[in-house]
Structure formats: C-alpha cells, structure tokens
Image 1 (cartoon, rainbow, N blue to C red):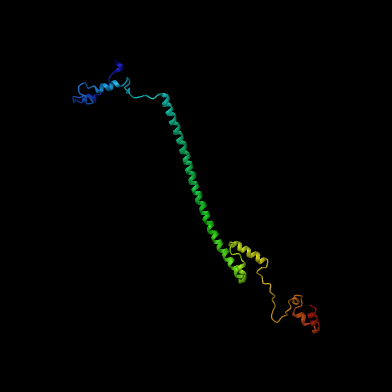
Image 2 (tube, helix red, strand yellow):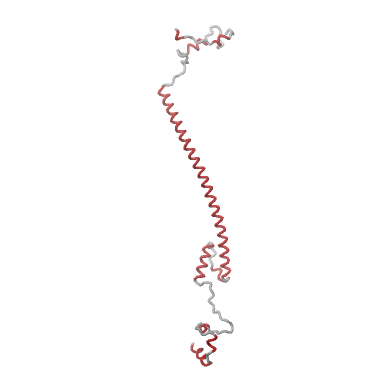
Amino acid sequence: MKNELLRLDLQHFAEDTGEGAEGTEGTGGSWVDEFLSKGKDGMDSTEQSIPKKRFDDVNNRYKTLSEDYKNRQVEYEAMSKDVEAGKATAAQLQETIDAGTKRVEALEGVLKTMLDAELELIDEEYRELVPADKPIEEQLEWLGKAKSKGLFVSKGIEFSIGGPSNPGRAGNGMGQAGYANKSPLELMQMGYSS
C-alpha cells in the first residue's frame, strides 16, 4: 500500500464551497475519478504512448533534416558570397565597357575629321566615287588605296607660259640653255626629226 499513496491536492481541500472540485456536489468524486484514471506513476492512462521504434525513426529523420538544413545554409552563404562577387565583377566589366565605348566614340570623331580632310583634298567631281555606305575606317582605307594607285592624281602636262610647248623635247636634258647654242638650221632639223 505504500507504493500507491494518494496525491493530495491541498488547494482542493482548502476551498470550502460545499461542492466538489468540478462542481459536482456530494461525493466530491471528480478528483477521485481523476486519480483512478491515472496509472501507478501518475501519468494519464488515456494518453497513448509512442513506440520506441517510431520515436527513434522520427528522431533520426529530425537529425537528418537538421544536418541537411545546416549544410544547405552553408551552401546558401557560399552562393550568396559568389553572387556578391559576381555583381562586383559585373560592375567592373560594365565600367570597362563604358570606358571602351567612350574611347570608340572619341576615335570615331578623329577618323571623321581625317576623312573630311582627305575629301577636301580631292576634286569635287571625284568625291562621289568614295563609298559613303561603308564605315569611316573603310572609307579611309579605300581613299588610301585609290591615292596609291594614282586615281586622284592629276596627269595633266604642266608647262610654263612662254616656254617650249613640246614637253617631250624638254625632258631630254636640253633645257633653254641647250637651244641657245644651236644655229637656226640645227633647230629646224631637230624640229622636223621628231
């Protein structure tokens, strides 16, 4: 009998309302019923106990999920660091692209000035030969090739007024001084021999 001692609820007995603890009158049997529904160790016998195997299974799942969560958290932090580094790299690349774009625009202005200067040197009737539908650098390249082949060079005969009108004779080393020492007969022979 010593193992089955009743637990006394002193607070229950301190109230003197003439009723039981649950509002039942007379027997005050609610606490008795409550005691009887509990087992030896004071646990409620109506509660269902969890089998050890199921408890271990749930506990192992919890531990596995907890470890998985920790691993994923570490992966997430590493990935977020990589994303931040990628954003920094992307910002640097964008700055490089912007600087390159500004440089290209500046050089394009210089090339346009050079093209305009080259076009000014060409006669107006030949300017339409330059391909206007191509980019500036290709137009400059085309102009360079055309000038090297002699397309825009004037091939007209240049002579001074009052000088000899036969440029072929002037090129043979006989300048004005060469004719001065010749007699009129020699000059006529030279004129008819050509």
